[in-house]
Amino acid sequence: MAAFICRCILVDWLAEVITVKKLTSHILHQTVAMMDSVISHNRRIPRSKLQLLAISCLVLSSRLVHTCIIDIFNLHH
Image (cartoon, rainbow, N blue to C red; front, side, top):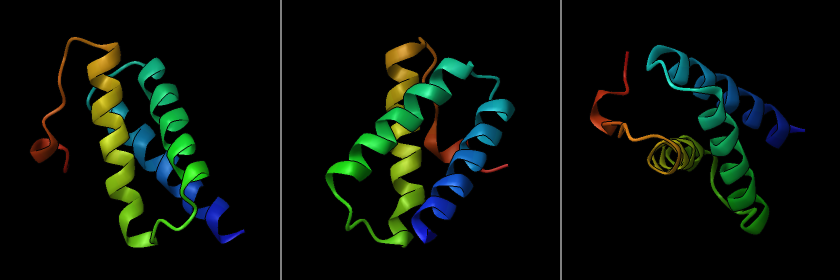
């Protein structure tokens, strides 16, 4: 149950970042799918690293889907 809650919080946060950065919903879906895939293969990811995983998946997805590249250092808002 705790993992589900953490995932929900991460997805909400990703949706907010994608909205602020004016990215497409396709990137959100790609990011969540990538994140779920990593988590399903490695269930021992510490909670403290989940946001890092989420942002890494977001950067990779944005590079695969869009021509725009997200600058990690400008993601705080």
